[in-house]
Image (cartoon, rainbow, N blue to C red; front, side, top):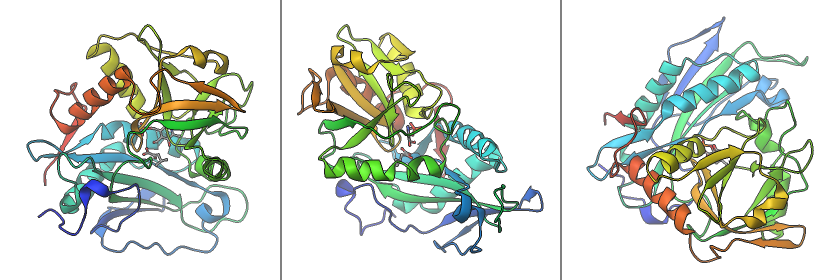
Length: 342
Ligand code: PLP
Ligand code: COI
């Protein structure tokens, strides 16, 4: 029975307690069998690694209700792989990738009433995360960990839905060369909080970060990768070792080439060339594809010809095709859709 207390069409991107979440503990060098619980609180040692040295990473993916009322999620194997990469970089034990997918299925199934109805524009956001739980005081990795996964129904990440965003070029950096920009470490987000509050106070929706080594190239925003459409209708996205390898972006590049017959290229993109492009968008699990109307670089306004009222034409095609694949109205490439038995 679909939860009847929720106004599905008007959800924002906020936490809401759902019925069950998954928990598994790592102790004595091994993962214990996980379990589902109703308890949405965590009690930890005062000196837990997560508190002292931010030893934590996370993932984000979504479950959808399809036109024919099945529940599916999108490429969870890639989230499992990326979380394994994050764990290795932070010296945390990898939660086995097959167990990760089983946990996604179990937690979504246990909260099936919270998967928004088809056509509502909302989806069920799934948040896997892991943290160091035992006491550390010298700088070293914890020896005990907890892996958790909760779900919460969400609407659009950016207020205003599909209204084009205004971004600014940030003076703050997000990631250092050879740092942790390519993994989903909580610390990458902690250090972006000052910049995002400041951006909002100045009237911007998000920050565009440049490569911190040379401050010449476009990297990404605080919570999404960026893509551009050139005037001759080619899709471009930054190539960099210090941005998060977005699953949405990787999927869209394939959708552009295989479904829309567009050329799609990943290459370094200079800040001083973006005024040549026709459209811009942010892409990610939370952002889906959010159109960008304007990027402000210290007072210089770069206004994309797609304007400030609608999504650009090509961005819209990418959006519609990806949404169709996720919602089951367009046939998906092999292995992209993971069916959940509800
Ligand atoms: N970049 C950052 C910094 C993010 O936080 C996210 C969100 O996960 C993305 C990009 C988009 O990645 P994905 O498409 O895998 O959700
Ligand atoms: C996601 O898209 O899943 C993210 O983790 C981004 C976050 C800023 C909400």
